[in-house]
Structure formats: structure tokens, C-alpha cells
Amino acid sequence: MKPNIAREIERLSNMTVAELREKYAEVFGEETRSRHKDFLRKRIAWRLQANEEGGLSERALRRARELANEADLRLIAPRGRTEIHRFRPSHDRRLPMPGTVITREYKGRTISVMVLDEGFEFEGEVYRSLSAVARKITGTQWNGYLFFDLAKRGNGK
Image (cartoon, rainbow, N blue to C red):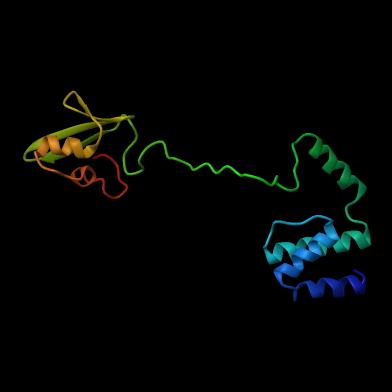
């Protein structure tokens, strides 16, 4: 590596993120959205060396073009409105998978409740929540997860 490039790369370590972003725009000819100091420093250092020493070999460039031709390639994501999709789990993680039977002993009686996709089946009736099943069994208000000992992410007994 030539001494002037080495000095310039050394100076990158003392630059602020704002200065690195300016340098990035100067070296690459486009702005960056990154504010990650190490990433910017490494990218700028690579480009400075590539400009001085020739960059990638012809073989590497050919292979990169082959790969790029087969893929939709974008260097910078489009500006504008970004849609954010929140992941919604298909079921409550505290519950066992649909089809599982939850059992519990209550006042000398064995209680069996089947977990369904949309609710719970107890004695031939479908309930929307475990709390509704617990209320039917006990006659009082209960947290269904506590009643069936599922408060911590557990499984049916």
C-alpha cells in the first residue's frame, strides 16, 4: 500500500460519523444512510485502496456480473415510505399446539380440555378462552392460564 493511502486510511480512524459520511459521498459519489462508524471507515478504506491499486481482478468482476445478472440487485434501498409488517404469532406461546388435550385434577375430578385453532373444547362445548372454561368448572372468575398451570410458557399435562 502506498504511503499516502496509508496515511489517509489512518486519518479515517479519527473522523466523526458526520465526517465519514461526507468522505463516503466524496469517494463513492453517492450518500450513505449508514451511521455505523466502523462500517463507513472500512468501506471508505477499501474504495481508496481500490481506486489506487485497481480494485477487483477481472475474473472477480466477471463472476460478480454473472451473479448480479441472476438476481435483483439494489445498492441502496429506495427512499420513500417503508411499510412495516409486524409478525403476529399464529397462536399464544403459552398454549400447547391445537389438538393437544390439557388435563387437570379439580376437586377429585379429572378435567380435560382440547386446544382448538379458535378456542377450547370442554364437555362438547367450545369456549373462546381458558378463563371461560375455568369459570364454567369452578363457578368463579379465574385466570385460565393459572387454573390450568400454564402461566409460564408450558405445555399441557
